[in-house]
Length: 327
Image (cartoon, rainbow, N blue to C red; front, side):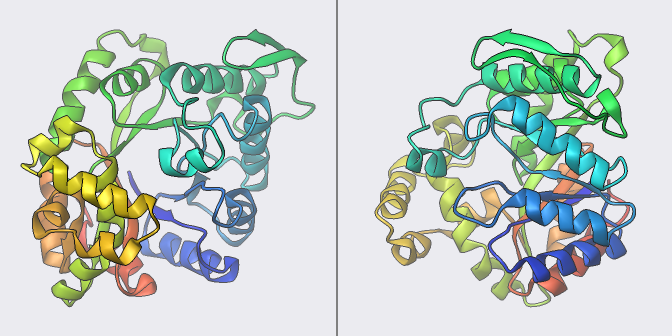
C-alpha cells in the first residue's frame, strides 16, 4: 500500500488538486492530518471524494477527544458514503502539542482509541450501542448504512509498544510514525507480538510506515525543507528513540523548548544532519528510494508524509516514482 499525507494548511482548492494528482500518480490512499489549527479535514476529504474515483480517503489521524467517538464514527461513515465505499478510518491518540492547546493533553491513551473504533465498527454494522468507559453513549445508532458497512478499514496511528501490539491484535493496520529502518524493525517486533494474539477472522494486517518525506532533484533543498517537521518529531521523540539514533536528549529538549515558546526559526536552526537522517527520508529521488527500500524490509506499506518537499506538486510525482514497486 502506498499512501500520501496532505495537510490542510493550504487552500482547499490546492489540496484537492494535490489529491487528484496523487490519484493520477498511483497512490492507493490519501490521508488528511487532523489538527484544530488547520482547515477542517472532513470538508477537505469530502471535496476530494467528489473529485476522485479510486483512491482511499481518510483522516491521518483523528482522535477520540476533540470529537465524541459516536460522532466521529458518523463522520467516517458519511465519508464512506460520499466516496462510494472508499473510506479508511485513521485513529490515534493525537498530537500532544495541539491537544495541549485544548486542555486535552492528559486525555491521551490506548483505551480511548480502542473503545472508539470498536464502537464505530458496531455502529457501521447497524447496531445501537450503550457504552460507559472513556466516553458515554446511550442507545446511540446511525440512521443510515455506509457502503462498506462494518468493513471500513481501521488504521491505528501510534508508535508506543502497547499501541503497536493493540493495533496488530484488533485493527486492520498500524500507521507507525517512522522513517528509518531501525524504527520500523522495532515496530515489526511489536506488531509480531500482537499478531500472535490476533483472531483469524480479523484477516490480514498491514504495518505501514507513516514517514516524513522530503524529495527534490536538488537534494540540499529537500533536506532544508525537512527541517520544520524534523524539529517537531525530534522534540516529541521518546528517549529510547533518541538513544536508538544517537541523538543528544538535551539537544532535543532545547528544540522542544523553542517550539513551545513559538521560536520556530530558532528551533529549525538547531536541527542537525543526524536528526534529518533519523526522522525523514530526505534528498534526491535516488536517496529516498534507497531509504524506502530499507524500510520495505520491515513494513507492508508507506505513507509519504509532510513536508513532501520544497515543491509540493513536484514532490507528489517524484515520491511516487521514487518508491514505485517497493510497496
